[in-house]
View 1 (cartoon, rainbow over the protein chains, first blue to last red):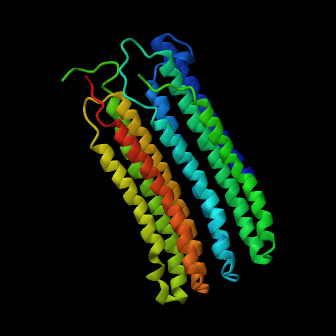
View 2 (cartoon, each protein chain N blue to C red):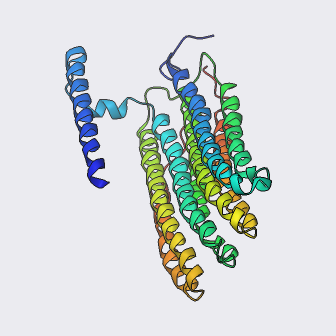
Amino acid sequence: MALYGSIYAGYGFGTLVTVVIAYGILDLIVNNRWFNIAYLIETPSPYFWASMGIGLCIGLSVIGAAWGILLTGVSIVGAAVKTPRIRTKNLISIIFCEVVAIYGLIVAIVFSSKLSNAIPVSGWSREALYAGYAMFWAGFTVGMANLACGICVGVVGSSCALADAADPQLFVKVLVIEIFGSIIGLFGLIVGLLMTGRVTPFK
Amino acid sequence: MSGPTVYCPVYSPLFGALGCAAAIALSCFGAAYGTAKSGVGIATMGVLRPDLVLKNALPVVMAGIIGIYGLVVAVLLSSGLSRDMTLFASFIQLAAGLGQGLSGLAAGYAIGVVGDAGVRGSAQQPRLYVGMILILIFAEVLGLYGLIVGLILNTRANGASCT
């Protein structure tokens, strides 16, 4: 399976390199500028960066939470056919996955309170550009951390349900592993809030 | 009405409309996946237990609600589109639509897979039905989170004028 996947990765990488080089050549011909990265980064409005950060934050967090709920839920309902006693206790694993989505929701709402309509007199100020870049990468950080955390908690929760169905003593022990997994989402939340701690709202 | 400026450019509605499209299109992908995957489970289960088919159609209904969340956000965003939009408003609409769309896609996926396994299991074990409902509700709430973020961002974008 992994071998078949790596064949298609070659196609994707080749396409990406071709597109980037073609864009560079066209830019050189039309605008007489060779891979000016600063132009690509400075020209979009900082609202673009900030909004994409917020969108990625909530989107990736919910994808991670849903993936985790999917993995855990399937194991719970499958194992509970023969041992229905496990179904209420193992909802804790589902709640751990849900909490991941709540982290993303909190960060998205906190970032959205920093957005305000501002038409600057002459060009964007450095604070506004800093705000845009910081919010983009902070949102991306929180989203990716919650994506990883959700999948991790989902896989461990699935094993927790199956272990609980086999032997009830194992539930608490595997739950400790799950708690370690859910710390990953907290790391992302902390880093995201630290990055945007000194961001001033746009004005 | 003043003409396009640097902060109200001509291409500004592109991003707002993209957000509106992403909200409904991605949510519909999620709702369709949820309906299809759990529908296969219901059909398989219904061969041996035809009396349970309508009761177990709950995952299909919940997947449809995900599509309604996307519809709500898309309708709200589309009422904010106009010829002269600030980039502020249009990028916020992009964020709202993208956030809601990805959330709806993920929630629909989760509802589909859990619903499929859940209806097959609850046909064999009747005590499982309540557990399946609880897990499906948690998956549904994920789509609601996307709706909340979409609504909050949309109210921030209101009232941004181009003067």
